[in-house]
Image (spheres, rainbow, N blue to C red):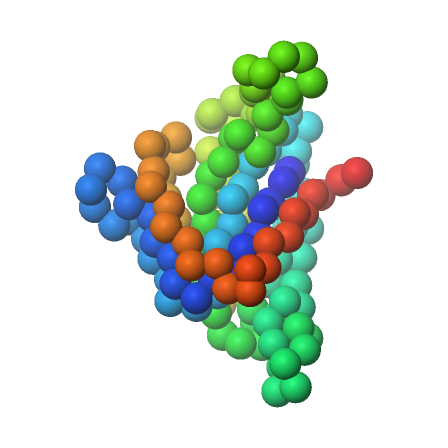
Length: 147
């Protein structure tokens, strides 16, 4: 499982001209799954995301987590995180988990984030989405459940 984390001042996802989810301050997550991912990966990365100390404390040092600052999450499914470009220039997505299984884990991931009493806005799995991100910092961090 992979999650690309971006600290955000304000972000939204629009689908077919309608805003589906938005946040004012917190994290934007791009979430992808591969075939051997499990609920353990989901729980591990949800805990990692909410405890990641990437928000400034009173001294301007990144020392606070999303839980500390009371931020929200905009979670976007992103199978292209498993793109493989080792052969040629056209990405292969063979390592990305198939839709039905990935949808289930994506929903579990968002519910696990909500279990920390965090507001989680989402896109729609498999939809054509327009994501507007006001990246704060900019801070962008790549997380994986396994090496």
